Length: 272
Ligand SMILES: [Zn+2]
Image 1 (cartoon, helix red, strand yellow):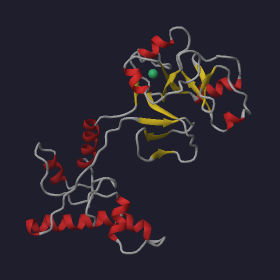
Image 2: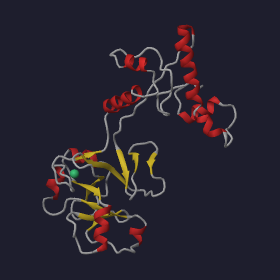
Image 3: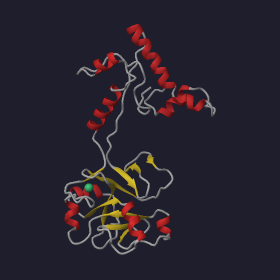
Image 4: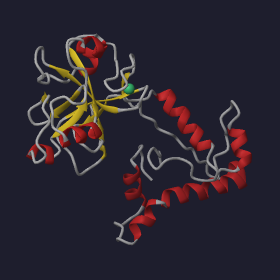
């Protein structure tokens, strides 16, 4: 269909001579998979005289994931790529996505300026600086529940470690905003849990979770290729639509040489 590897959308465009009508659009999305399934079936029944079908799976390492500073989770690659998640509530600010491996809560990894509660002006090296134990790294866990409780009874710091990340002013505020604060209503004031006080630097460097308080818990969001590949292969070859005979053969150490009889890959990653 195309001479080089192409995205699924580009492959669809190459496959059809004219643009799709509204009714044809959804049908066309499944066309390449149906075509591959038909060719695979012919190959499986006719053997090597038939056209061979080779399926390549492309996996990109899930690293350098940034999370948009907004109430609804949205992510993007810090170096390139498209937005994933919410399209509606989007601000320009985004920071490395973090989570706690003990309690599972998630949020943003930020760096504070040398003194005070303002965010550092330069935030392109947050991961590197944290790894090198340089700078004032802070884990900010999104805390909408604690934030709502605190806004209902606005007394300063009634929840330990609760701060408000002001996206517009790039700072952490200790006082809860008024319920009708325009920034709060616009989603530009985010309730977060973080470490405060004199030991905050020490706890932050030790990756102690601001919520469950367990050490060595905060991690940057992501997965290495080996993990992703393992999960993907398990999903593909565990697919109930796959012929049981081929499923058992494909679980042997030697990769299955006969193409699967059905479309088992994700929609992204075909090399037509
Ligand atoms: Zn935790």
